[in-house]
Length: 87
Image 1 (tube, helix red, strand yellow):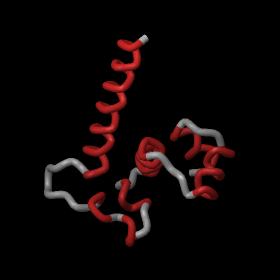
Image 2 (tube, helix red, strand yellow):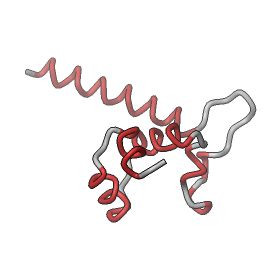
Image 3 (tube, one colour):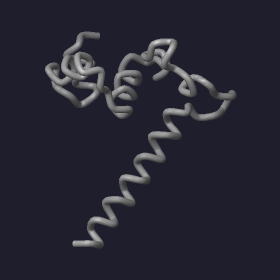
Image 4 (cartoon, rainbow, N blue to C red):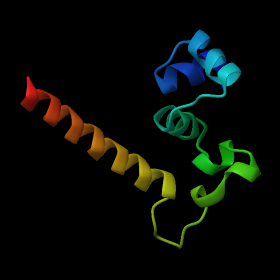
């Protein structure tokens, strides 16, 4: 897979791909898209020293990152609802 294809799979430009690695700033959503496009677990894209809870799971359980992403998405929806209410 080329960088252009991987970038497209994550919904970012090739330039955005390079800048995220230069800045060492990758969102969970993008990291998840990279992992999905490459057909590998998310934790495999992280240095071993940074994997922590990402790889810890029992058979049949969701990855820590999936649970955390779901929680962040719920929090974001709540913030958006609150902002709409305040307008």
